[in-house]
Image 1: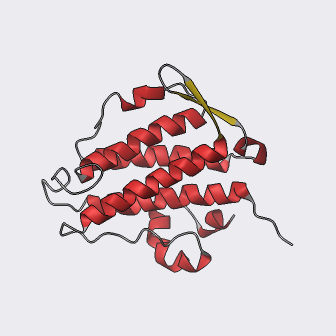
Image 2: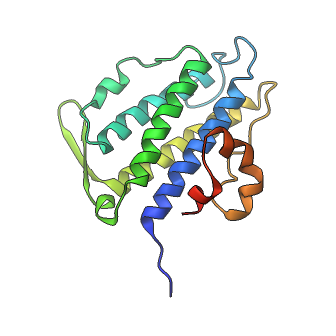
Length: 187
């Protein structure tokens, strides 16, 4: 009987997260002038606001999982990026931090306590719970941007082909652009 390796699961989710962000932001880079910030139906009323929300939340949680004290400073500027190129570069950087964090995880690390600085209090959560929350948050808001793209001339990219080995044939270009290898992803 084999067992599930939770460290491997979170590592693969981190790579999946980075790949989905890469694909989505590449699609958003093809928007016509004015479409990035144009009003749309969604939890946040534009692609720009939604993507800025994703990155500020990533900064907050990734910093906390790294043991940092950034806390609510992550949200001081509600929309830190006015253009997709700058936002994409910053998202790629925080995605790299998250994949590095997941690459370094151990079974003990997954159950370690993360201290999230919430201004007037410290929220303490298990690492695996924070990771699960962060990946769900990303998926939720990426889906909203994906739907918003349907109202533009840019085709929404495929975001759900990644984890299983059979999907390798669909991700080769992205894997190369991100500097990854199939061997790295199969671990």
